[in-house]
Every structure is written in structure tokens, then in C-alpha cells.
Image 1 (cartoon, rainbow, N blue to C red):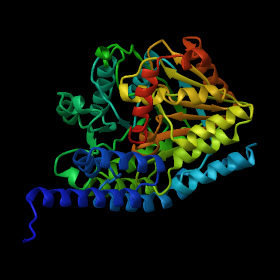
Image 2 (tube, helix red, strand yellow):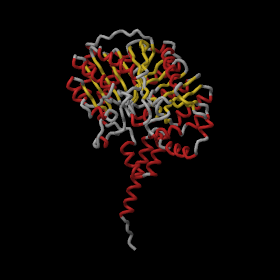
Image 3 (cartoon, rainbow, N blue to C red):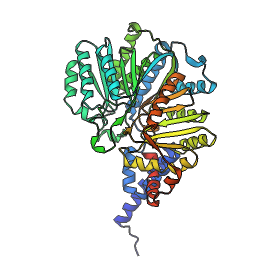
Image 4 (cartoon, one colour):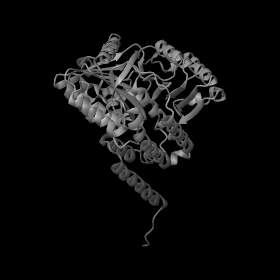
Length: 492
């Protein structure tokens, strides 16, 4: 009897081969064990969908040309930082512990940016405070006004900010706006684009997306940074997107977004500007040439910078998927392991992996007071369910979990003991740790740490603590849902 093969058998064999090849790529390319297991589950449980999903978003691909530009700008900045950013006294001998000095060195090895001791900082905790301070600084700008934000929604108070940038450009101030292609999609479709260009503002879309680009670049890698630099003297960063919470996502039913920003002067401002310019440079060959030319002219004719009167020791830590090390993730783990008294974390999205979960649990078991302040409602059901799957384990180990009921708490802070704060754009999830472009301030200062700790106490006053007994007594149906979604948590 002649041997015959049907088309269905051929299709099955080809399909199995593709799934197997993808599985081998997962084992070869994924560094995170949780991500490996999650992708293998998706590939074999939903083979057709899984293969397409992995090819589109499975690996943090930024494109070869972009990576080449990144390497070039990094080499340029290594020299530039030695002469112009880190040329002031390094902060390793300013009363810092050996452990803190080690954390500074670890981040510096990855970013070329070290800690400086000449900074002053002002914590801004309401939308009115943030926008009024930004407006005042932009209106007084004389040389430059640089903005980089994940989300720009030109409504309410944000329209006033954009009007101030427009007016600054019209009076001769060098103005630049970098906005994420997805996060700021409404901005890019608005009349503001042509209006700002007409005023002389340089606009750059960060990580543009498209069908062709998806063949060589992962479309869901986003620039999640929030930076404003005025005259290279004043810098802002934190959790605040350029949105007015009175208008933003009102239909989501989570309440107004609650954010903070840090207004800084000192060397950290130059480091923020360096991060922003690098993000602009890697978007195109033309941008790279312009940024390098501008910074070379800076070497010859540096702008006049007002001296900083501060003494806060701080370090800018940018993180991105194209870095060799997961610098912000490693920094967080180091800080948690070094805690001796207390750890307080505020984050809107809490989806830890096993090492982070273990670090928090063991800290609580060795007597450190560990508190998580999370919003009672978030704008992602998947994240909400995945996050809650970790609560039983944490509560059993003595970790305190408080749900903030005053809106969507979007503030991202980590306070360790009395002298260390991590402040910026990073959520406690795998996307922020390994996929997004983020920026954080590592602050080694008791006064600023006390200021942020007081902010956290204010959040706790609007929160409800979860009780272990009541939480474990919930319906088993919810436990099943949460633990099922948890399997996908490394991919969220």
C-alpha cells in the first residue's frame, strides 16, 4: 500500500515545527525564568496565537539601526559625562555607607552617570502645584525648554503648559518636545502638532509604530519617561504625565490620577538633559548628527548655569531594554535587601517576579516593617487580578498591604529606612523593569527621604489595610481567577 501524507498532516508538522522553533528561541533569549515559563505556556496552550504573539512582542527588539545609534551616542556620552556632567565632586565620601556606595557604582557602571552632592529638590504633590511650577519656569526660560513625556493630553491645565512652550519658542527659546507614539497618540493627531511646529518647537515622536516596523522592532516597547528641563538649570521628573486628571480617563471609573513630581536644581538636571537628548538622538540618523553637533558646540560655548545651593546627594538612573544590565531592577533588589528598619512602596501596578517577592517576604520575616500602598482600583483588570494573586503570600509573611481609596494612586516611590529614596517613573512590574524606557532618581538624603515618607503617610491616611484572615476567607472562585492570571504576570 503506497505511503501518503495528507495536507492536514503537512500543516500539523509545519505548525509544530514553528512552535518548537519559537520555544527554542524562548529558552535561548529570555533571561527571566517567569517569562520563559509564561511564553512556553502560551505557545503550547494557544499555538497559533502564541506564535504570532511571540514574533510580535516576545523579544525586546528595538531594531539594528536604532541599536547602532544607541551605541554611538553612548560612546559620545561616556566622554561628555566625564567632562561636563560628572566633573563635580563625586558623592561617595559624603557620609554614605559602603552598601550605598556600592549601589551608586553599580548604576554608574551601567549608565555612565554617577551620584552628585550639589542638588536641591522640591517635592510637588498636587496637579496645581506641578502645573503652576512648570508654567512659571517655562515662562521665565531664557535658553532652552526640553520636554519628554509618555502621555501628553492637550486638555485643561496641559493646554496652558503647551501655550507656554509655544510662547517660549516664539521669543527665541530653544524648545523641544519628545512624546511617545502610543501614549501620546491623541497629541500627535491634534492641531497642537502644526501649531507648535509653526512656533519653532522641535517635535519628535518616540518609538513610532507601524506594520512594517513590527517586522524588525517590537511595537509595545514604550518610552515611559517624564522629564522637563529648563535652561539646563531646573529639571522635573516623577510620575506625572502631561495630563489633567479632571479630564483624563474619566470613563475608567478609578477616580482621579494622583501623581507627584520633583523639581530639581544641580548636577542631576544635566543628567536628565543627557537622557532626554539621547532619546531624541536614537530616533533617526539626522537627529543623532544634530544632537552630537549641538553637544560639541556646548563644549566650546557652554551656557551660563546658575550655581546650585543644594547639598542633596542624588543619582539619575535611566533604564531601557537595550541596556546590558537591568539596572533599575537590580537597584530595587539591592535597596530592599539592605533595609534594616522599614520599606514603604507606592506603585499603581504591582506584579512582582519571584526574586522581588522573595526580597519583600524575607525582609518582613527578618523584622523590617514592609508596607505596600496600592490603589484600590486600577485601569487594568489583568494587572489587578495578577497583583492580588500575590497578596496571600505577602500577608502571611507579615507584609502590610494598604489599598488607597482616594483615586488611582500613580505615584512611584520606594523609601528604605531613613536615608534612601527611589523616585521616578518605574512601576513594580516586569514591563517597567525590563521593557520600558524609564528614569529614576536615587536620593541619598535624610531630609528628602523624610519628606517623601511624610507623603506616603498621607496616602496611608486615605487607605484601608487588608487583613490576612478576611482576605484568605474570600471566595475560592476569586483565588482561581487571580492565580490563573498570575501565570501571565511575567508578560504584563
